Length: 30
Image (tube, rainbow, N blue to C red; front, side, top):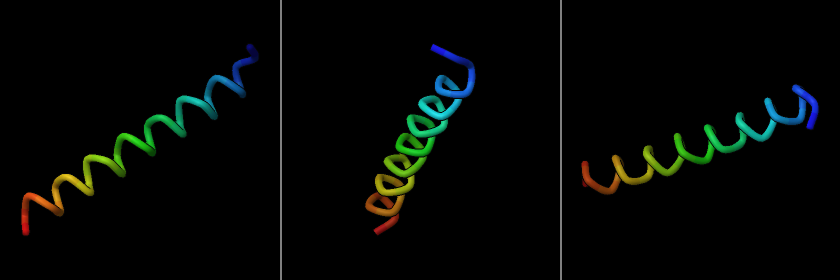
């Protein structure tokens, strides 16, 4: 796999993880 493709996949995983953490944090705050 080329470096660009790996970077895009890593960015998507990082974004999904950050979104999940934000949702959990919002639920805990409520």
